Each structure stands twice: as C-alpha cells, then as structure tokens.
Image (cartoon, rainbow, N blue to C red; front, side, top):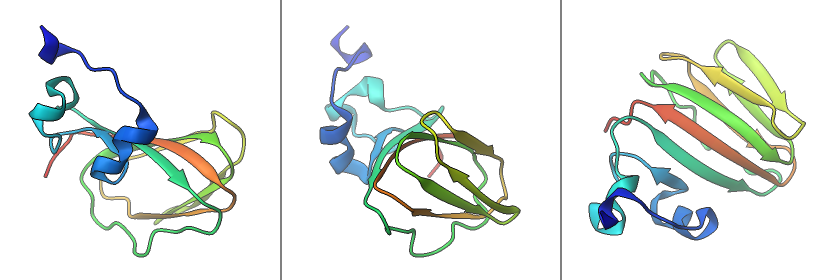
Length: 117
C-alpha cells in the first residue's frame, strides 16, 4: 500500500529531475506513485530574465503551462503568448515547437502527456 501514495514538497522534490515531479523517469525507490507513463508534471521556479537556451522542436506530446505567479512568456512556432494573471494557461499539441522566458520572477506548473523517453 505504501507504494500507491506519496507526500512531498514540490520545491524540494523538483531538484531531483530539473523540476519534474511525475513521469516515466522517476525512480520507483523515490515513490512508485510518482512514476507514470501517462503524464509528466513539472514545478518550475524561474527568476526574471531566465529563458530556455534553445527551442524544443518536434515534440510529440501535448502540454499545458499554468501560471502560479509572475509573468511568463511562451514562444510557440505559431506565435507568442504572455501569461500575466494567476491561473492563466496555454495548451499546445504535438509538433508545435516552443521556447520560453520569465519576464518576472515566475512559478509555473507544466503538464505534458504522455510521458515518453
């Protein structure tokens, strides 16, 4: 039964996998409930000015980016969106390239599915 649930802290657990809390890459020793091929969940803390060094190209997953706090710009191959108000989010599908930049200190939650290597 202990393998089917997990209690943690996103700030502490995020250090283990570049912010990712759930996904296929989680070692079952660190919580079998966190290992899944269904989706990946990331807790991202980004200081103002931080940006992704290169574009993610030809990803075959669907993703959701949700703003918890701050101001965060997402650049998509289709255009750019800025998340400004707590709760703003954007969803994009497979094959849409993306990059991002934190315009202010920001906290975002990213969910993408499925979780594939």
